[in-house]
Length: 218
Image (cartoon, rainbow, N blue to C red):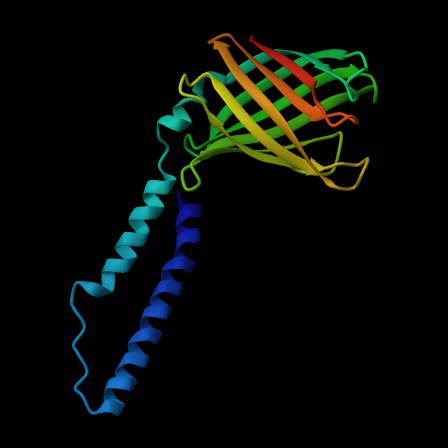
């Protein structure tokens, strides 16, 4: 928790600085008007800081939304299908995916290893992080791998069943040099299986499935 304390200190100091500045301005105005400056309330100095710390702690405490990610923990065997155009056949490969909780149950860290497959014919290695941001009330993720130099980021929601997650991610597309968005649906089938389906937009402007992954608990 030391990291979180370090992050909070600048905010506390900033609030204190603004409070001191406001007090000085108020004192100066009262002095110029000839009125006696009001004595500060004894309960006021720590009030803002306590409220700020309370909100920080509320935002930093894992809740039931984090618990919905618990079925993803562990080691999985993956079966992957992907394609880059809607009329192209899927290429397939297999691999492993390992996830574990970090930061005291706030985030899941995952690492994927995939066998060499077309079109690059090189072994795949990727790492990612997923969690629930209580401030924006959405699931968030970040992903990096050895197939590019960009960081794929996104956010999403979970439906009422707690089994289906809908994410929208974005990355810098090497083909166009522009920011590109993709939609992904993650479905928790049961405790031993979950799936991913990602959707891209083809040249005709229509959405098509470009990626499928089935994860089976090892």
